[in-house]
Length: 61
Picture 1 (cartoon, rainbow, N blue to C red):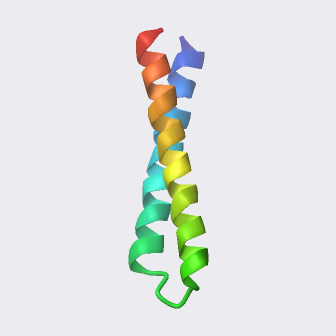
Picture 2 (tube, rainbow, N blue to C red; picture 1 turned 90 degrees about the vertical axis):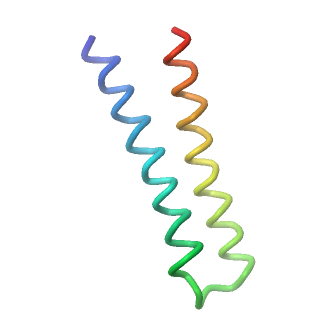
Picture 3 (cartoon, rainbow, N blue to C red; picture 1 turned 135 degrees about the horizontal axis):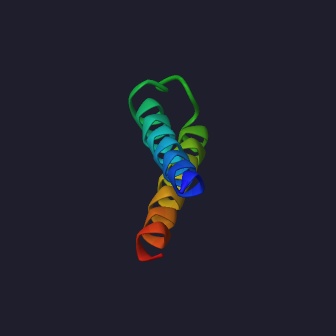
């Protein structure tokens, strides 16, 4: 039971961090090079996508 709760906590934290990272890249990182912003945005989307994938696995289980 504890393991499942910790899994959900990790999923929420990683997904929230991914969306926060994406927001910072989009709105606050104006001085960065466009390729660096694109790479960081891809990283944020990767984190958010991981969280969605893990959440669907947890819901199905």
